[in-house]
Image 1 (cartoon, rainbow, N blue to C red):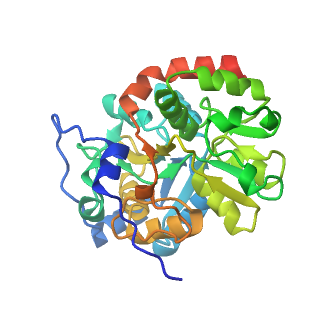
Image 2 (image 1 turned 60 degrees about the vertical axis):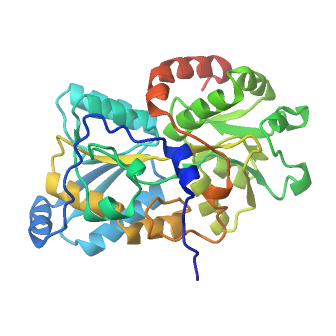
Length: 351
């Protein structure tokens, strides 16, 4: 199968990722994967990966790593981003250091972990040359591992294409009452990010206050809305992981994605190595592995994700990001508003 090159326009990239904060930045020198590093990682024998990525995709990556480095096992601990954050907080408060590499779809988590000295700077040679500067923290403590969007989707057996919602305003039509599903920012980092971006783009809570009256089925993980729509439990998803919708479509499920007219929430989903990683060499090896072009290509082709690696080619059925109106991330502002958003959301949806 042929795949066309995945390129972002300069404008699209700038809008999506924002300008890098270079104040007091000290990017580490790129690390080459050497036999010595592999030997040290193999002696440790294990790497523990806390992640919000869909479980099957996470386990597939673990298998690929173990095939390449057979002496090192990968323990994948998958849960929602907000639960990942809570778990690490609880563990560290008790001086328990289990996690080596972490991934969350709430970029604000990495600001917190960095501020509290919990992340270990690391830059692979490939990250240094094949990723845009805005995709890597200026101090090298984390990088944008995968990119997804939070669009709409509908069940093609239950909804005709001409009747499908095409805007956020369309979701408020009385005909969709009892037919919608969405996830919660109290569990999912993807949905926390998309909720913040929606609030900014639509000018506040008015949309969500009206949406709450639509008898919306509430889920936790961002992977659940596309699953609920695929099975016909609900007709339309309000938000959810684009990449998992593609994965379900690859399995033959009757789903179709819609990118709303007002714009599309974008989520960069960073990853990092913990400073107190119990398997530091295996952590570096695994971290470099998941940012490598072959793994990124696998994630795009098999998992439906997007990649910022310039060598990775996009799927032909992906709408190019450069052709979409992407709502920008603002992790600093979102971090300040996170508590308020979760509280207000619970009041409206009970999720």
